[in-house]
Length: 348
Ligand SMILES: Nc1ncnc2c1ncn2[C@@H]1O[C@H](COP(=O)(O)OP(=O)(O)OP(=O)(O)O)[C@@H](O)[C@H]1O
Image 1 (cartoon, rainbow, N blue to C red):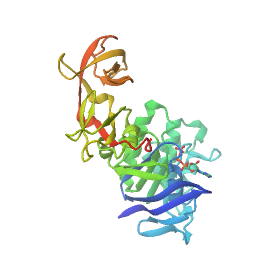
Image 2 (cartoon, helix red, strand yellow; image 1 turned 90 degrees about the horizontal axis):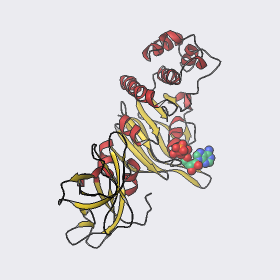
Image 3 (cartoon, helix red, strand yellow; image 1 turned 135 degrees about the vertical axis):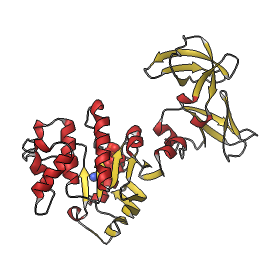
Image 4 (cartoon, rainbow, N blue to C red; image 1 turned 90 degrees about the vertical axis):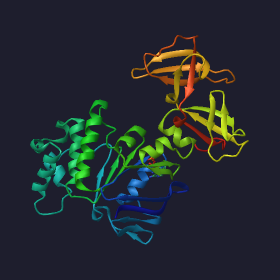
């Protein structure tokens, strides 16, 4: 059963379309990440589901109940949604326990709030006030507060972006485990592809108000729908080429299969820096190293290829740190190369 569903939802601010024809179903117990660049409509989508924006066209369902369409809407507090925002929005003048109890409109709210705090490991901090807690602890209080009323849907807007990088991974994992135990449908907004890949069962990649691709993290990373989707997940070398008679795009680094694209089609070939691997002299393609730097887990090697003006980049596993000016030989891992019809850059 769909925990949360958007059906043909469009939303405008004046003449600006923020969300266009959104169709998305999130099952109970599923985590879907809305991913995309700033201004693509992620937060507006979340606010529509929460009831903080009025639905102008289309409808939104929670469970099998319509909560908003152009005829009317259920107010936010009647929707059974939990909300977590970037700034946690805790009430500074209320104790941690009262913050968590705030959203529970039932008898026994304090006992339930205490149980929610226990779940996030802060059972002994109920009498503290928000300013007495670290960022990670405040995030856990916000999670406890959102979970305590046992929502059917959890809406989260960049919930980890305020956290220290070292803390973030742990808090993400703990949050996922707690959410999984509740069985809520989770819609999480992020602009960070790695966060989406780490958290999501499925990712909805948005651009200019529209979902351009919906699928598992593996689908989006390994089978991007267009050049923009491929570039959003990982930097890539972009070459302009044409499809040859054998249906491969011919580049100075080798031929890349072009699927069903007809011979002669102008294409963009995206080659991820990880797609290039060093091979023995005489194999692959000879290239001239211009710069090489060790980045930790791998080395970033910029190189020139005969026939191309721009420099290209490869990420090679250490100890490969070839000196500037040297010649090395590279081969392509075709699984990390993508060919798209060249439409003049409308997917960036
Ligand atoms: N209250 C508003 N009034 C007018 N325009 C708005 C309003 N809220 C959002 N917009 C516009 O709608 C579009 C989508 O905004 P939204 O906040 O949903 O994007 P976003 O993907 O969440 O961006 P970010 O990652 O920067 O938060 C943007 O062009 C934004 O400027």
